Image (spheres, rainbow over the protein chains, first blue to last red):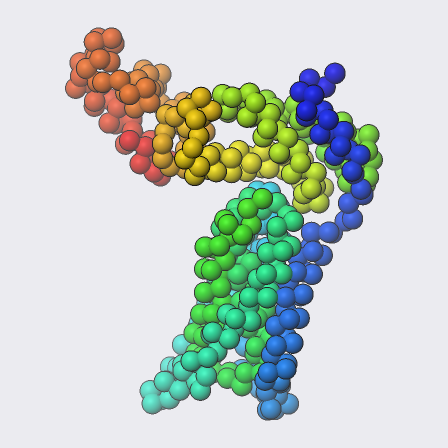
Length: 218
Length: 179
């Protein structure tokens, strides 16, 4: 009747019998759940090990603090949009990827401006800060739970560009992790944030691109 | 927009709402389309049927990734294509594939992106019929230039020049070395 082999017809019967209504917006909700679930774990780690930076109240009134937060929050947001799009078959993420580059370039320009207006003796301090030896590593470590959460969600989806999907999941994980870490990190020189925060986030995107085809295969 | 798309999309939207009858029809229609899709691309019918089933299963478990604002057939095609590429890739990684089981395309080309094989026919469509025959005889069937020269009545150097030009043009156009 259907022109299909018996085995296939049987399968169709079983699948049809298994049908349940599909809640709308399941996809964004699952991805948000994965990302936030991972972020909660990282947040607990940061909160219990280091807590909030002691000078937080003062920092809240300074522009560099907000530039730093906008940078990581912006990257997390475009990363999330990219993941959302790449989680669907044939999904693309040209625009979010472009926005990510634009955000990074913006911060890069601010970093150069800050260096240009400072005497050369200060350059090293502006770039290296006090914590450059640990900052990128901690951001990458704290990105792992977020990455796991995103992977968990994406494996229930149907990405067809696994490298791009992995890269954007890595970017999102790195940026969310940086956001959490920034609460306890008192560095806010633009060159420092660009090099070490940006570097850690970019590294996570590369890790994601490398692991995507293996992690996200379905 | 064509009628198939309109029908299938309506069925899919009903299915997502939990309508079992619509879903059964959708799976049957999709199954037929998938069968045609895979049997056109794989020589072995049993393998094509396995892929049809695997893809139907993927449609079922991942139906939430369909965006009702977009065409259903594009969604279905993207899944079918992904499953085909994944299948060809995993076969290439397993070295114990028997000769009889290997799809024809995989025998002709040992290396490279599986998409290259699928798209080969399309790429060859873009050159003149005579050149296409030359490329097919020498590069795909593996015959010698001398042999082709005897059969076609062209000189060996004329064949080499025609092929060289065509392949250079193709690799420029498609951005990879096709020779």
